[in-house]
Image (cartoon, rainbow, N blue to C red; front, side):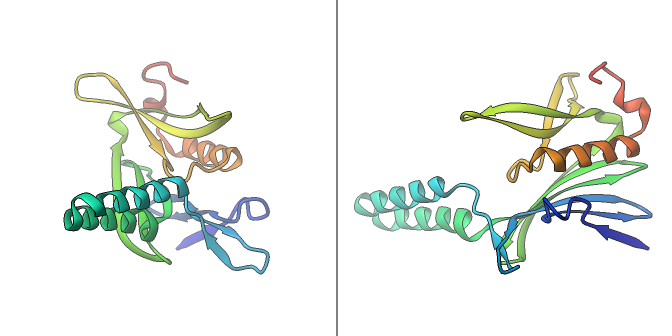
Length: 188
């Protein structure tokens, strides 16, 4: 049995949760609703794409084939293989997994996953950072490296959803994470 919901449907329809008997998924999709109801893929960094095109054209004049090949590959990576969705998956007995899925028009062509066992997880917090003239909020998992140093692993690193989504994810995640892991270093 599973249940997929869009808990913030009115203001953030790209956010959904999936609850099953073995895992809980928090998913942010990379689209925004259009007035006619169709979804539009958000391209996160248009200035990066423009810079890559200029770089490829500059390489075309100096090192024709190598520059063209590298330039086209970078354009394909940033234009055609956009981030489709990012997820945080909680496995209640084991840990959390941070996922990024890239592809083209709904077809997933590559995925990256980082699993964090509860034994290495100190806490999950909402942090803030300056982004230009704005303040951006993000969820971060505080983990321990092999040498005891604290390592930050950002959830939804490419899409950076707005605060209401982060608050919902944070609140629900706290109920699934064992209490013994969230108070280890006093980060709470």
